[in-house]
Each structure stands twice: as structure tokens, then as C-alpha cells.
Length: 211
Image (cartoon, rainbow, N blue to C red; front, side):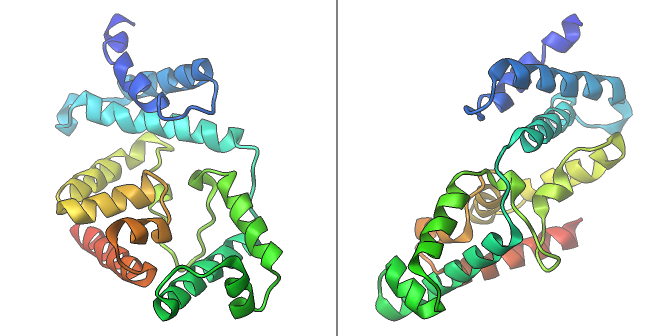
């Protein structure tokens, strides 16, 4: 047990990100992930134990958060939010500014309150519960830990991400680890949501080719 406690800081480093959940519960879940990593780790995989254990811990913590999250979002709200984002991008280019909710409602031909309610609903959840349709790439689900047989793929993906240039790597981290939307990233980078979407698609294709 003493050698496990040497890596306790890994657990704290992960659970400190989640302020809205019980710290003791997260710690216990994280330690279970750490012990699972210790049990399954083999030196011949030529990977540092800390790197190997990180994904076990993160997987257990995110699984706990998903199950604990009381908020659920319907597919209709997700689809409406996508329409709002697309409309926002189109109207921003036309108007030279962000459209108001009223302007969006007129453009989409829906009640303004639906736009307000959709935004409020999305503010109440973490993107861990985000619905991805069949046409989208669910990078989060491709790297979550569910059993030891997936670890080599996960580590390969992590290495591939680290090989990206800083701009591409930061975009992927913001989208899939920091839970930012394409609209939020577009504001940070000073480009349109469509440009961010195209850039993201190219990066994901690059990662797939690498893997």
C-alpha cells in the first residue's frame, strides 16, 4: 500500500478539477483507479506507471461523475443548440456582431424563450453527458477507461495528441478535456465557428491517420 501512496498526488491532481462533487468520494474513486492500475501494470509495456495510472484514475473519476450528474439533456435540446450555434455563426458574419436572442428566434422561426431555455439547460451540465450523434466523432468516449485491454490505444492517442503543434493540441484539449464548445473556441481564436469546425475535423483526421 505504501508504494501506491507514492502516487497519491496523481489522484489529487485529477479530483481538484471537480469542485461540485464530494472530495472524499472522488478521492476514494480515484484511489480505486490507482489500485487497478497497479494491479494491471506490466513493466514490459515500456510506459511510465504515472502515465499508465493517470488514465485509470481519470476513467474512474469521470465514470463516477457521469453517474452522479443529476442533469440529463434531451436530444431535442442538443439539436436545437446546434441550430442556434450555426445560426449565430451565419448571422454574426452578416451583421458583424453577435445576434440577439430575438434576432435568432426570428431567423430560426422559433420562440425566443426556447433559445433562452436551451442556454440555461446547457449551463447546468458538464459536457461529459453531451450527446454525440452518429456523424460526430466522440473523442471522449474513445479515450475513457473501461477495461485494461484499451490502455494501449489510449496511450497511443495521448502520444499522438502530444505530437500535434501547439495550436492544434490546444484546440483538442479545449474541446475534449476542457469541455469548450466550438463557439467558445471561435471567440478565443478570433475565427468563425465554421472555421473551428473545419480545423477540428482536419486535426481528428490527422490523429486517425497517426493511429
